[in-house]
Image (cartoon, rainbow, N blue to C red; front, side, top):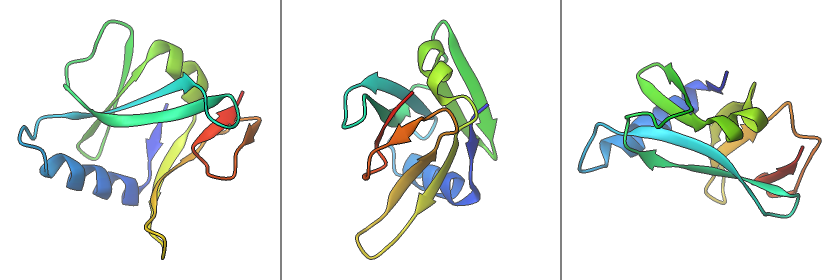
Length: 108
């Protein structure tokens, strides 16, 4: 399961509301690369799940994760933080053995 903090839900809803087609889902994934081996991917996508997608919904935000990425993201909590430098989504992944300083990549 993947959990969104209240701040992440609020920011996801804000991003969805800015789309010309408001019926979109948040797509999460993992791909090879980054400082530590894998990097997190996040974007808006068609809400219809693809074959093998895991589907989660929290407070009206639909989250899609492909099966391979789910192996690396299961149990992850996503938060949204703001700070002087801007802020952004933050992944708190219990399966990550180490993360880089930027928080955008990890090793499993």
